[in-house]
Length: 300
Image (cartoon, rainbow, N blue to C red):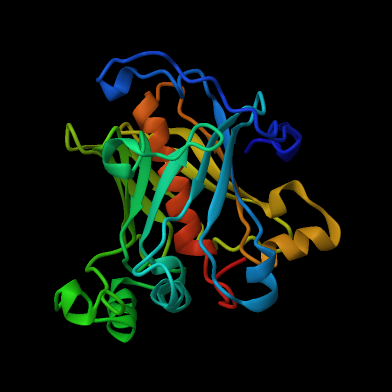
C-alpha cells in the first residue's frame, strides 16, 4: 500500500484548475483532461453546520492531482426533490442510500449549462440500499422495506419521498450527456465490499473492486484500501480511504466523526480517460455506501 506521506503532503492549489484540453474529439475515450493523471485525491468538505446541528447538507467534494496539486474537479450535490424541506427529509432519512446528481466543475464559476444542464462530466447515483459489513442481500431487502416501498410502486405514487429502487447501491458516470460507465455494488457475502465497473458502450466489466477483509471502518487511525482488479484478476490500482485526510490530533477526530472522508485513487496504468472518471465515481459510491451514515456504527 502506498505510504500516506506520498499523497497527503500534496495539497490542492487553491483556485488553480488543471487547464482544459482543446480537443473536440467526440470519442470520449480520447479526450485528454485526465490523461497523464496517475493519482487523485477526493476529499469531502467538512460542513460546520452539519457537524454542529446534525442538519444533513448537500455533499461537496474537492478533487485534485495528487502529484501536482492541480484541482481537477469540484463536485456538489444538486438539490433533491423540491430543494427545500423535502430534500432535507430525504437526506436525513436515507443518508448514504439517497440519490445524488453531482455535476463536476472544471473551473471556478463553471455553471454546467451544457448537455442538459448536467455539464461535461456528471455523476448520477440511484436511491438504493448499500450493503454494510455483516449484511447480506436479505438484510438489504428488509432495510429497503423499512425505508420505502422497495420499488413495488411508482415514484409518483409517493411523491418521490419514500420511494426506493430495487437492487444495491449504484452510480453512473456521464461524459457530454452520454452514460459511459455504471458502477454496481454486489453481495460479496456478509457485506464484504464488492463492486463492478461496466463499460456501458461495450457492456463489458472493465474493473472489479473486491475487499477480502470484512471491516471497512477506519478505526484505530488506520487507512482502508479497496483494491482495483482488472479483467485478468490482477490488482492494478487502489482506492484508499485515508484516515482524516492526513490531519492529526483533535482535528482528525473531528474530521472523521463528521464523515468528511478523504479517498486517494491510484489509477491503473492502462486506464482510459473515461475509465478514470468511472473510478472517481467508484470512490464516491464507496463514500456514500460505507462512510455517509452519521451517528451509525458502520461509519468512521
